[in-house]
Length: 433
Image (cartoon, rainbow, N blue to C red; front, side):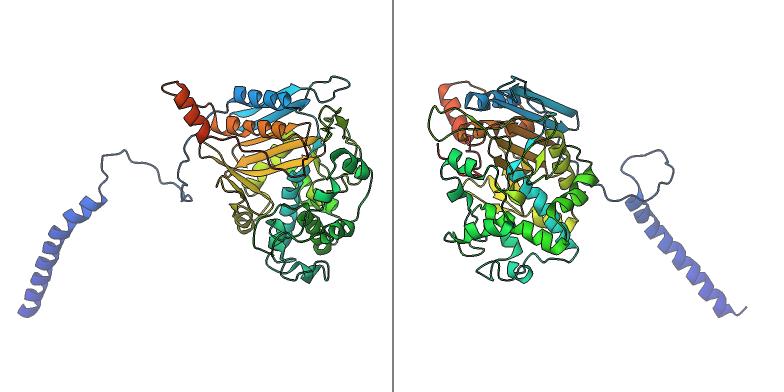
């Protein structure tokens, strides 16, 4: 071998050895663990782990009972609540489900869920959007030509209560009991209900502001039937009730009876001191897809948790549904697409809906991760103080026991009460007391 070749090989070997001496320690330092660990067997790749959520407070079931009793003290014959969480199911009841028989309130009993039906209707419609049969930002008149007087009103405006369509129930129930008795057994068409709304002035320009209106979800029902080609009852059944095995949930419009074990509803007349009116049997045709679903607490818990866990909607549609805007100046109440969000005093956000139909007021809410849910119902509807008191079940269930003030004093108590005002219940129907 030539001498020059020997020299090149020797120099290369020397350079490689020098580089190894410089780089090896640095590489070892970067790869070394912070502390020695025992060798482990290789594992299959896993998806990234989500950040651990802070532990949720235990539900204050005594506080739930206090809220139920407060609803009774303010005019409800009975009330009940069912909470589900990682620890299991907890239920509480107060009062009676039937004033005549005296039968106690029962969390296994069915009742009219009122405007919680709007969330059912939204789920069906958003599934149809995902299937390409509707577009959220398309004009309603594209699908229902000539129905509305303004081509600017979109499908999204209906779901967010920003269409400006007047709520026909304002005139229908201007007098509580006479208005109810006039429609108790009546069967309306969607078109008739929309016509009642269009006879009234519109409340806002399309998209301008939130203004709750049952008319919006009557039109949603029409869109569902037009896009799906079958009655809305079939769509509820196929898309929600059967997949979730909701054995006590139904849409029986216009049948007036509630089958099986059920809660009887009671309506307060406008006149102080007048006797309660049993409003259980009714077609609920004045509400239809805005409020005619029947269910029970267990099914409502199943529905809200399944919805929040993404079992009913694609991620895209669930994100759209839970994108909310404020509905009042407290910045604690919001509305998405057929879905309310409440921000509770402990910082917990819960999603769901309130529900009013003659004789029943309902709360059905769950946390965004679907791990905790509460359904609560009082068997009266148009007694705002009772409905507001029932709302205390949300704070008790999701926020747990309130810590006692460090220095109990009149000044501290007054400050605490100012910090946590009891907001009035949503008025999903007119109240004239």
